[in-house]
Image (tube, rainbow, N blue to C red):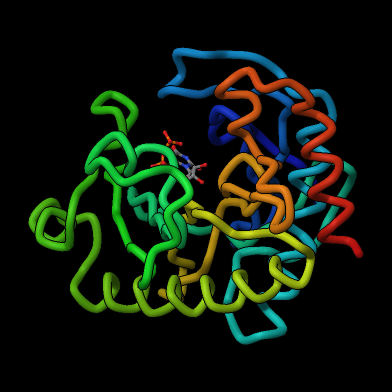
Length: 235
Ligand code: UDP
């Protein structure tokens, strides 16, 4: 397959057309941003790590019956995926309170939640990815009622699988953000990535943060944390 023109460049990835209209190439970058683009930087080796980690996790999820956009790895920093239209929704699950929910409703960071919290954000940088609910999504025509139901069911299944998967690797899956897309034939699939850029990972024993919060909060050892997470996923 041939890598054709760039369709899109996001903060952490580029998307390219291929000679097959049903397939795109995603190239993972080392660029890192936080706080809606206010903080910019680069994390050495991140593109390669996130590409590989997403391959391993999406392959595992496929084996457990979750349809994803992933087709195959092409190189250290590129993967072939199904061409999808992304729903402009950031789908977030929280198992432990951290990040924005602590600021928004006053929960203490680290509080284990009795039931996971499911959130939608409207994926729109100009508005700062605001928190929305089903009614907004429907009224704004971001997805249909059936699509919202499918996305919610898939997300809770993904959370159940990922929580156990990471716990076996000594990691508390605090929260994560995923995105969904729709293929040309109408199938809803998990798209985007699952990596330390998009999840909060805390070591079960020490509570050490092994994710992008090290970059966001200038905690140091950012690259080391990404390397450690890939090692845990590979083990
Ligand atoms: N997240 C993400 N992209 C975003 C916003 C959040 O991947 O644009 C992830 C983030 O890494 C965390 C989870 O979603 O794992 C919840 O993030 P939160 O709402 O707490 O926002 P943050 O504190 O990261 O601004």
